[in-house]
Amino acid sequence: MNPELDQRTVLKFGFYTSIILTVLTLVTFGLAMVAIPPAGPYCPGGCMSYPYSDLLSYYPRDYFWMYFAIFQLFAFIIFITSIHFIVPLVKRMYSFISIVFALIATTVLLIAYFTQFSVVPISMVKGESEGIALITQYNGHGLFIALEELGYITMSIAFMFLVPVFNRKNSLEKSIRIILILQFALMLLSFLFYTIKFGVDRNYRFEVAIITIDWLVTIAIGILVTILIKRKMRSESNKSIVIRFVKAINDHDVNEIVNLMSEGHIFIDATDHKSVGKKGMKEGWEGYYELFPDYQIEISDITENESIIGLFGYAKATYKNLANNLNSNFWRIPASWKAIVENNKVKHWQVYCDYTDLLKIIDKNK
Image (cartoon, rainbow, N blue to C red; front, side, top):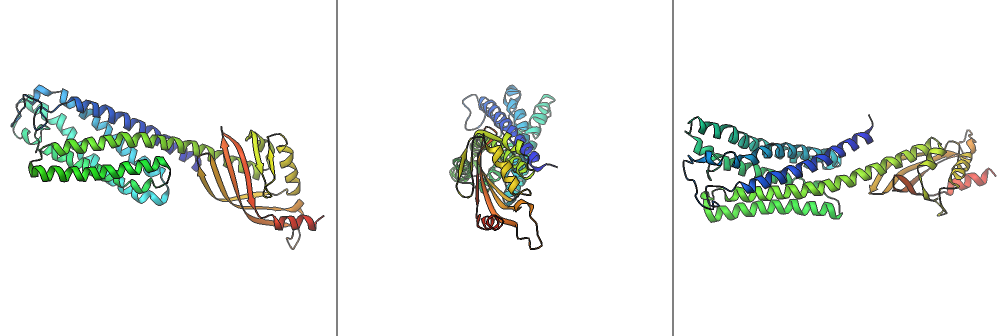
């Protein structure tokens, strides 16, 4: 199994999931905004009251958004799960907790929405209206509103546990953190405000507030994570090119080394000598391999910042393959390399190491 390929697959999956979630949330939000409640504190006029016997007059207009909300919730749980597999291993405890709360939120809301459009309308059509008032969406202190409040509070907590996941100092991840923290704070403040002002009779006021907060955050985070994943996909592609470059060096495949270089390729060795341009590099590498026929790079760590890749490890070789019992012509030294990738080509390759032992070996064999 190729881990590089697997990571690219995960990133691509997360990228499209983010887009789908954003679009579904926008559509659901738009349809919900059209469904102006015909009961409760935000009713503009001609309002229903208990036992809400006229609710069929608003079917299916007030139920369309719930169908889209079902699919939006499916996309939400896939989105959170995708983030879990994209983030570094050390951050996955937080993303896993986020998944747990996302599952709770999704389960509660799926039950609320599916029963609402599957049970309430047909029950009223068949004259089975007993108990419907308790579960209809128009009852501001009914079961549907309570389930929505619980579901979206839990969703807000799921978002909050993503804060430690986006911990890099770049402006994009900083923006994501700020939005995630603000949404949780707004959720708490709105709950306290409506509870203090209206007590247990807050009706659906808080429900409308928390849905608005969560959906706006979902849209914003969906867009920002889409951008973030796109950058990671580009960075992952750059990383794979550098890994191919290292493999070509270790395979002594000069043609592949040159093929992976940009036309304006810059090579800087450990003595700070700079060579500019692709031309002449083939001869340079061939000459180096004549001096060190078994030259190898050992990479232990890789860091990346978009187009810039840092590699850390060791370089080793035997001078002109002059092996002896004392191993005196063999060298292995700590080294690091800076690579810059542009347009899928290695534009910059710089070596950092202490060549002292290597130069002593060369002088000794003159």
